[in-house]
Amino acid sequence: MKIVLNTSPIIFLGKIESLGLLQDCVDDIFAPKAVIDELCDYTLPYFIKVRPLSDIGAAYVQGALGQLHQGELEAMVLAKELSADFVVLDDLLARRKAQRLALNVIGTLGLLLLFEKRSLLSADQVWQKINLLIQQHGFYVSSNILNQIQIKILGDRTEES
Image 1 (cartoon, rainbow, N blue to C red):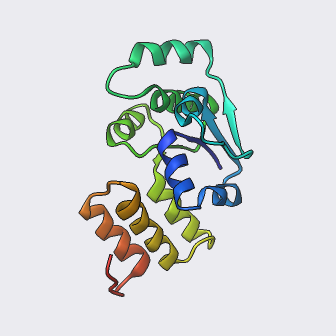
Image 2: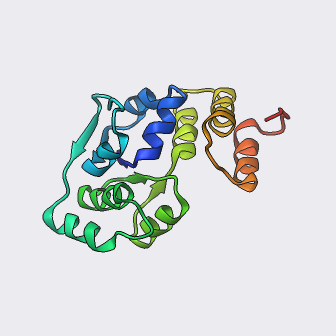
């Protein structure tokens, strides 16, 4: 599997000490230069490869800047150029734009669910990490999505969030 990361999934996975799990379930992990620039002093793990956009891709990004950040747009263009399996985006507007570009989209929560599916994290660990993201790191998730995830990974068990 080949993915292209935007800034927020790198930051959020790093905050919950789960970024390293990517290398255990994804073959190729890329990020565009704008994402690296947005990370500022954050040290990027060795397994995330930085790739420049083509000249055409860079021109598209410059013409499309507006409601979306440069990192989001570059991640989408790079995903298209590399024929990535997924572009990893959390922002709703960015996700919608990526879907209009016929890209497969996954977010931070989707990656956590993938880690559980690949037995890298237990269901309880995923639920704890989601709650940590929400309560301590300002990650927004609608109550509807949160309920769906809770039912999916915890089933009929009831736990306080």
